Image (cartoon, rainbow, N blue to C red; front, side, top):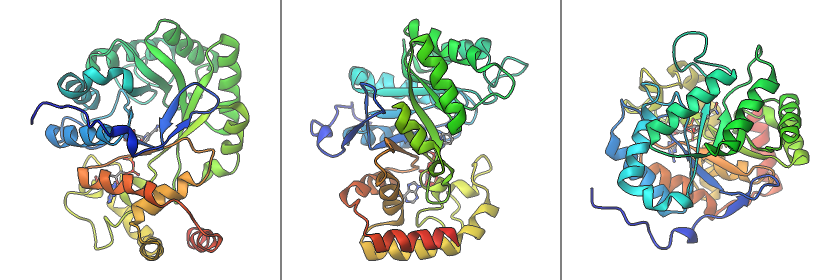
Length: 330
Ligand SMILES: NC(=O)c1ccc[n+]([C@@H]2O[C@H](COP(=O)([O-])OP(=O)(O)OC[C@H]3O[C@@H](n4cnc5c(N)ncnc54)[C@H](OP(=O)(O)O)[C@@H]3O)[C@@H](O)[C@H]2O)c1
């Protein structure tokens, strides 16, 4: 691949939104490296996607210690992409990683102990060849470790300069309030909560969106396309190269069939709107001003381009909202 020089019009496509009441703005669309960037995947394909993302002003790339497979390999691949392409642009990037799920064997390789979080971020920095990440997340609540211990580890990592901001992921409204209270006391405010939110997964609407707005914390919605269900990917069955067909994919074939009737109906609405279903699903999330960014995945440059196209048309009529709600609540 030819040497990379970022598109000099990269800041003309995407808008940026303030993350809660922090000083940081995130692009309305961010790119996650959970699938498609591991050791099992084609490195050059992933590299093309990352280059195209940055060329379009996607400044935020999201990782976690365990992304792969094998675990750690997405960070290694991203480290190579930084080295080859993006290193000169480091100050234009918001790179996040996380610890919380199973990463190494024994009692110190998962959940929320200080021992695990601090060791894990050190490993992540080595894999990516970075001095610091921009956001370090606790990946999921830990029912056993005192929240104070987990939050003190995040605070320490920020004070050491290994992370610029602290985040939480998969925290409920109540857990978010408590984490924010502790972090505020420590002097390291909580920047953001990363949560699953899509047309098919709406738990955050009950309380969390109001809570984060009150607290001045941002929200980034992961799996906004329900891992590909909310696209045209599965309209004619399960393609051999799709996530649902891969043995390591988190979307299982038996999750496709029960969703497909609704997907077809939503697809018809998207067609009438003149956009793809993926674009409608992204725009639908961004219509709520409390959502800071939508964290997509993509297995090709074409998918990424399609998703960025969501920003061309984000209005919904009241009738469309009702029509979509009716389908989703059935
Ligand atoms: N904090 C957490 O616990 C957590 C958990 C999960 C994810 N995340 C983050 O969220 C990111 C996104 O998650 P996700 O990958 O599940 O997101 P997603 O956007 O819901 O799904 C991405 C998948 O949808 C398909 N797709 C994307 N755009 C498409 C398009 N325009 N047309 C047709 N198909 C399209 C592709 O599937 P194919 O591969 O089949 O082509 C792609 O791999 C992750 O990378 C990660 O950073 C965080």
